[in-house]
Image 1 (spheres, helix red, strand yellow):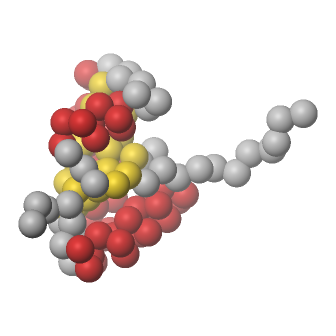
Image 2: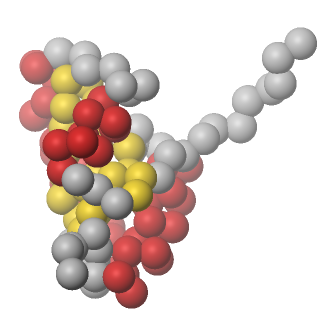
Length: 103
């Protein structure tokens, strides 16, 4: 059986942490790996974003699920689908922030 891979886009917010917690809960019984994805607009932003992802992953390392940081240059609306294609993940999670409905 092929290993399942999940993608969880993360924008360094508490809401994204909740999405990651849900992904971990689903991934654990399946033995899946999770790519924690952050999208930046410039290559100069990669080292800082990678360090932040490593800190986030450190908070969840005791959960028993392999978490891998993944920083990509691009647009948040397109990058998860490209990452999905490249890594053949099985499922992805998106966190949404509550916003006022449009009038």
